[in-house]
Image 1: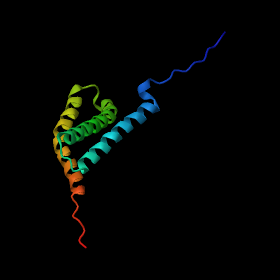
Image 2 (image 1 turned 60 degrees about the vertical axis):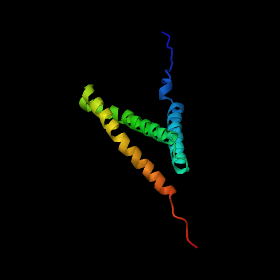
Image 3 (image 1 turned 90 degrees about the horizontal axis):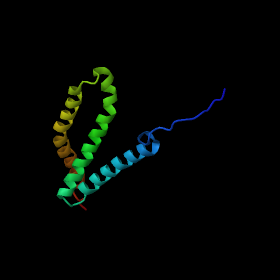
Image 4 (image 1 turned 30 degrees about the vertical axis):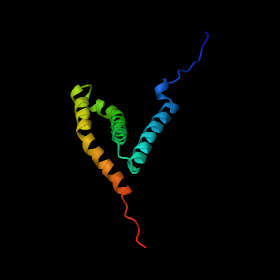
Length: 113
C-alpha cells in the first residue's frame, strides 16, 4: 500500500500577505484622510477621500462582525440588511464628526509672545 502526503495551501485571500495588504490599504486611506484634512485645502477630493475611508472601515468592521452574527441568527437576510442600514445611517454623521475633529486640530491658536 502506497501513501501520498500533500498539503493544500490556503486561498490567496487567506494569506498573511493579503491581510497585510488590507491593513496597508486602510492605513493609507486613514493617512490621506488625516493629511488632506489637516492641509489648508478644503476641496471635494478631501471629502471624497474621507468618505471612502469611512466606508472602507465600516465595511471591514461588518466583514469582521458578520461571522459572529451568522451562527446566532442564521442566514436570515434581514440581519444583513439591518447592518447595512445602520452603516448607511451612521456614515454622514460620522464623516462630519471626523472632519470636525481633524479640522479642530489644525486650527490651533498661535502662541502669544
